[in-house]
Image (cartoon, rainbow, N blue to C red):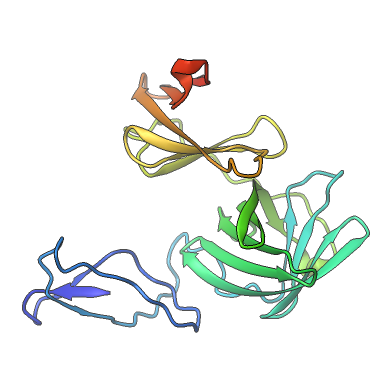
Length: 246
């Protein structure tokens, strides 16, 4: 989407939107910006460095986590149908997929038994990455889980996961708009830093009706490769939790 004040000079408004063949609605304010006119332009994007997410899930099979005791796998043999395998159990589903970013793609899954899931895959490279799996019942969020995935060749083999190389040790100046995964068990906790002072935690095990915990935090870089983070939850003063990281 682009905006203009004079129908001559146009600037991009908001984030890039990825087409998926469906109708898409977006509300743009004319009160909070100087733009009076808006238009939509189509841009074909190819060969972007780091654009690891595919445009389609058809033909792909995802190994969810790498736990031998829970070998869950999502298989997408076609553009609309798939199966979930867990041990000897196989559940069929229909789905629709849409690209959410250069490295993200989302699958809205409806199982044959009426259960629905929304799974967001974020690729760290062309073969592996992290996922967020939201489980819905009667239209309400029941559970949210996170973990890692890797693509399985043809859905038949189970190769070792491809590890994402770590970045050089240099703490960021700010955590605003960043997401960190803290993995002490098979499924990591997720801390989402919404701005320079507030965020949300998505625990590895989420109880129904308590999907996220809001927190306030302070952060500072200490040296060239260390930083300090203190996370205080809203109920800390009444005996709640405080996390301290270095």
